Figure 1 (cartoon, rainbow, N blue to C red):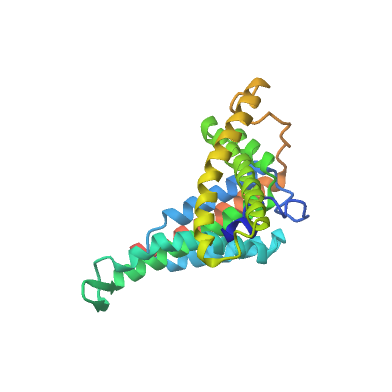
Figure 2 (figure 1 turned 60 degrees about the vertical axis):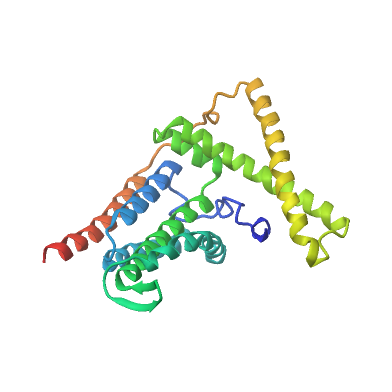
Length: 262
């Protein structure tokens, strides 16, 4: 429950800064981020030099964007907790040399390599995506997805998630204050029971309120997409930024090709 108080759900907190990254229009930022994530994720396991090149490029971008590194790392840390629970199982896969064994449980060199590769790819991707959402206002981000011809259902789902996540956090804060005012959170013995009841009531309350909000939106002409806005025209530096992104990705893939054909 501490996630509701760490600020990880507060987006676009660094969107008002002035930097070369902020001067790009939102579609260019989204395109650069997607190219980086796809290239990072599709690189086969074990090609550390490729991710080293991508990591250096990402570090330079973080410095140029002047984003709050502490805030960025906190967000990535919270997300990595859930990701780590999923990735831990890859450590015990078969293949390679057995490095440690206890009964049927064993750690192999293959599992260690897969864990490190997937973990590094996930870390780089999370940092890039968090940089994007921290520095781009949510309406501009949704409009950029529309401009890039993303599926309308995907855009409407993301818009609803953003709207209802804020609703969820607000409802939880209200219920937590109500429980604290009744001294229900002071005893460790009953705290789990209270939190369990709060989660169940939270689902029902947010579902009902979300349905009322959706019906009100439909009554006002909502069509499933965010309202169209005037999209700023791309400038020459947007093309330069995309070209630089592609250059870094091509250099990394060239290292991959060289490693497989030498």
